[in-house]
Amino acid sequence: VEVEWEQLPAFDAPGGDIDVWALTANGKAFLTNGPIQPFATAGMGWMGAGVESGDDESNVGFRFGAGIDFYATRNIAFT
Image (cartoon, rainbow, N blue to C red; front, side, top):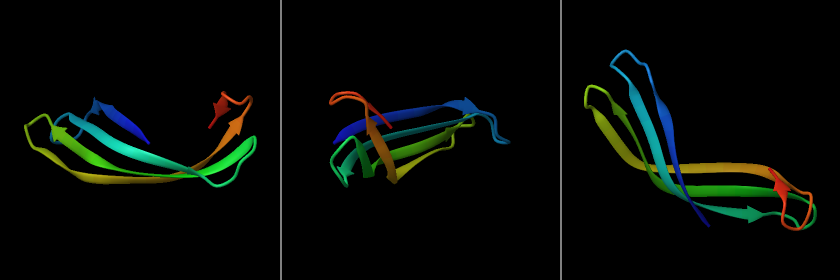
């Protein structure tokens, strides 16, 4: 399990600059063992966006994903 904080740099929009952020707890499940390991990941947390004019909104958010880890050694992997 990991805890992740993400914040995107503000970007221009018609209503003003928008800031986007997310705080999630994520889990990762490996589907095989060996030097090449496919995985699935899922998480839940709080995500939000704020507009420069003061209109902020946040809510529960979810994330889902998949990938492959390539292990060069027992402790070094490339995703």
